Image (tube, each protein chain N blue to C red):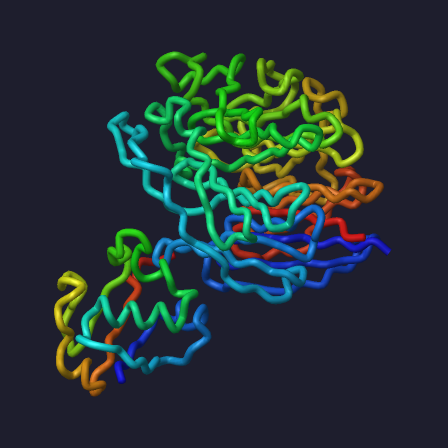
Amino acid sequence: MTDIRVLVGTRKGAFVLTSDGKRERWKVAGPHFGGWEIYHLKGSPIDPSRIYASQSSAWFGQLIPRSDDGGKTWAPVGNRFEYEGAPGTHQWYDGTPRPWTFKRVWHLEPSLTDPDRVLAGVEDAGLFHSRDGGQTWQELAGLRSQQGSHWQPGAGGMCLHTILLDPANPRRMFTAISAAGAFRTDDGGSTWQPINRGLRSEFMPDPTAEVGHCVHRMAMHPSRPGVLFMQKHWDVMRSDDAGQSWREVSGNLPSDFGFAIEVHAHEPDTIYVAPIKSDTEHYPPEGKLRVYRSRTGGHEWEALIKGLPQRYCYVNVLRDAMAVDSLDPCGVYFGTTGGQLYASADAGDSWRAILRDLPAVLSIEVQTLP
Amino acid sequence: MIRIVLPSLLRALARVGPEIELAVDGPVTLSSVLDSLEARYPMLRGTIRDQATRQRRPLIRFFACAEDLSREPPDAPLPDAVAKGTEPLLIVAAIAGG
């Protein structure tokens, strides 16, 4: 029978949850790396026992632990992230130049075909890859040549947080950076182009500039890699041409600010967001925690509230803290900054908290195990 | 033998107890002690000093014999009591909340 494994990164450690396909009873292991910030964990799609994690600390820097047994045991691999060449400067919040400085890994994206290959999106924004299971890392520096001197940090830091691999075209991938925007490569990462046409960001001197947009998250269904969904700082956006152009699909959402966005495992036009009131009030509108689902690829949204708190709820759902499994019906999971881990085994119709008292949840990934 | 006391998270990372004893070849300096420490416990590389610049991480301090050695040159000799093993080198993480 199929099992589900949920990888939870939190502000003070990692947790690994497992359940059978019913998704009713969960076994919880952890905290692993207690006391460390775990920005992200992700397993290899072709070897689910191989899991990479980002373990970091303001005091002690970055480590990359790797598990080869599905998260039971871990050993650190390489943690040397050095930008290629002279790293140059980006903009600080006040517009002054700041040297590029490595701070942490926000997101790890294992290859679709080789468990020893993995990408890392880092702060200050850059993309690194490893071909030896994480032992050594090299930067794909062509990305930063896309007007990197004009990029600037969002409130959470200048982070590369989204890496989407095109299953139909191994040379193509998408990344997103706060606050620089979205980028695409069609040659395996050597050269990149900004893909931000149609985005509008009022905080910028030129609201439609080619770079500088605060993209919070992007998502794609693997069967339709030319269609991208984006939760921007404000606005939920959609592209039907691999990012060449974007249109807004916020529709009837109570707020189009938010961080997380995810696609249903079997319905490429069913998408989920967790609206947040505003960029200064990082909590749900009206104190009601609601996931919104669109079955039409945007524009028309329905509130999913069954099992979620509908008063006095002032948590946030961070950008990497929502994921789906690939069972039928599709399971949807999200974590909050209040430490709740919510799960739905019916595509979002109803929810329950698997755990309620974790440290602030930074990321969720789900593995559907054979 | 040189005695070293690590912050608790690094003890857990290196799977060691409250104090480590290390043999250090040649002059006993911050640099040589950290070289020996990282050679024996490679998982500590990058956690105390930057791997490329070898600069002390900003929220790490070094103390010994009731002195703050954090700003001493990395190749300056450590106090005799540290070199003889009668006093430990304390690697301290800033008390900075979180």
